[in-house]
Amino acid sequence: MREEYNDYDDARYDDEYDDQMPDNKAVRGYRIVIIILAVILVALSALYFRIHRQQQAEYVLLEEDRDKIQNDLDSLIVSFDDLKIQNDSIAANLDEANKLMEQLKNERRLNYAKIRAYEKEVGTLRTVMQGYIRQIDSLNTLNKKLANENVSYKKQISTAQLRAEMAEERAEELNNKVRVGAVIRARDIRLVPLNAKDKAVTRVKGASRLRTDLVLAANELAEPGQKTIYVCITSPDGYVLSTPEAASFTFEGEPKIYSASRDVEYDGSDLEVSVFYNGSGFTAGTYHIELYTDGRLIGSTDVALR
Image (cartoon, rainbow, N blue to C red; front, side, top):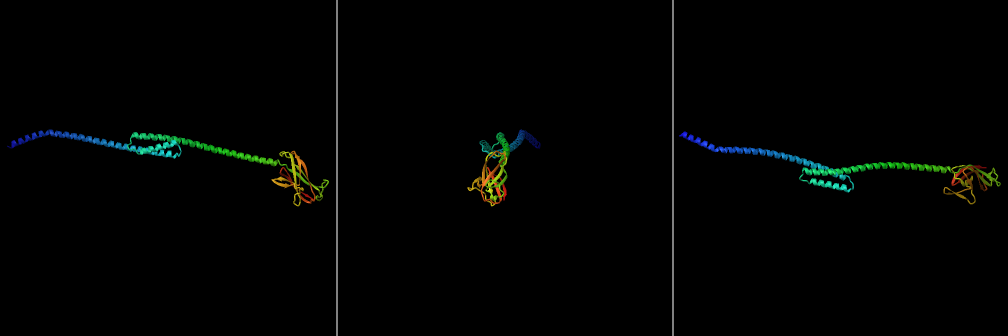
């Protein structure tokens, strides 16, 4: 009976095991599929994270490019603004740079194409700026050259003016010397008392007139022609002997009383001249004599008469 039961159980178990065999194969298939899916998932995850990291790196690079472009634009804007020149072209480029800066700040979706476009526009503005800088450098160089030339011209002008002034002063000096040299001088001045017969006397008290003798010295620079000689005789008591009319001539803009005068013809060579003063009541003492012609004092002397 036991053996029959055992045979029955073994047979039943074998039958049940045979029935379950297909199910175990399916499980193994599922497991293989799951493993494959897990591997794919891991691979996809790794690929995702790698792509994500690449995108992050690209984003960082794009942000760095954005910052670099913004810095370049800031520099260009400052450079345009520092020019401080009323110029429509410069103002237009400055406005364009400001607009580009605002557009870049508001840009939300950056990519390499946009970055390259921004870089191209910044490059164009930089080229324009460099052109302005070269022009300004050229103008500065020209300005310095003109300034140096101006300084040189001023020095030349100053030197020329100085030379002209020196020449003028020299000419004036020479003219003065010529004028001074052209003045006729009188020498050998004497005062002789005469009696009524025009004879020289030793006592002035008895004289009826005074004769002034002189020599107009030769002078090639002096202008020849008629000259009027004015004689001023000052008596020992300090009064100028004069005619009853108190005749006078102009000297240094003022009238000056004279004692006697005479017109002579002067040709530039020595000329002896005598000028007479008629009067009476002369007293002994020292008489002062001054001679004038052409508005100048040409000689003077003191003569003591007894």
